[in-house]
Length: 195
Ligand SMILES: [Fe+2]
Ligand SMILES: [Fe+2]
Image (cartoon, rainbow, N blue to C red):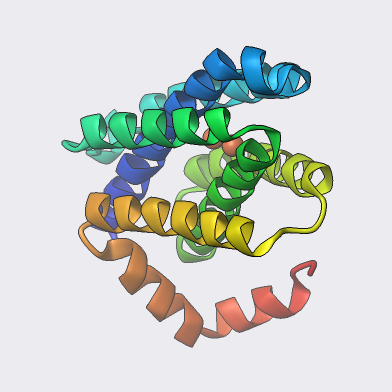
């Protein structure tokens, strides 16, 4: 349990670090390719920076240390941000959608796993998740129907994020998801979750 809580914090902190790099890179090129998205990207970057700070504050008391592969999250985030930013508006929104959808699923798993065990952490995750859902909704509503190549881009971005999460939690994220799928709490939560 304690080891898993520490890994939850470690990967969430690393994920926010990567998200900051994505949005920073996109803001850098958005001026050329999609200036209308800049206000959204700047606001979202501010959210991700505050998420990073919240997780960082919660880490020491739970024995969590920053991920040793933080550089990989940074490099991956910058690469995703630059490539999608250069591809233009739709690619930026599809990247946002894929990242935020993947993050949200993991935060949902974490909240169910934590239950009543750590109310302070659960509250922080739930508040952060609400903002991540806002990013997801903005991306989905702004992109329109996806073409085949855009579905491939979505799947690629989501796969990159999943691999980084798996590596950073040393498989805990997958174990947690498997356990949760088998637990009654997850069934109840799935039934009550909005579609
Ligand atoms: Fe975030
Ligand atoms: Fe986000």
